[in-house]
Image (cartoon, rainbow, N blue to C red; front, side):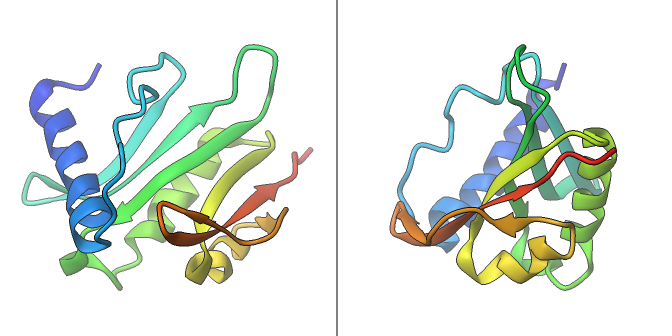
Length: 138
């Protein structure tokens, strides 16, 4: 239900950070953005997205969700925008289990939201990551 302009602006933000700034050539467009269970959350400044994340439903047979593509524009970092998005995403998740793959330097950030490492560090597109999960809550 995103209009073309908004979708373009969100994808551009992701490319500016993940591809250009982090110097990581990878296929960001993985087919999941248009899945009916995908929710896109973002914050704007002057009508332009400056922070974003996507929330994926794991599938019809699972109550688990997945958070990914958490990104904040370089000029907007330090303003608590990622925290606002995580809080909003976890409000949508509710008591369901949730997973994510954290860039290793952000493990402490995700721990504040109840996520814990679930495996060893690995390289994804040349960047160290750690799989993390937050257990279902009653």
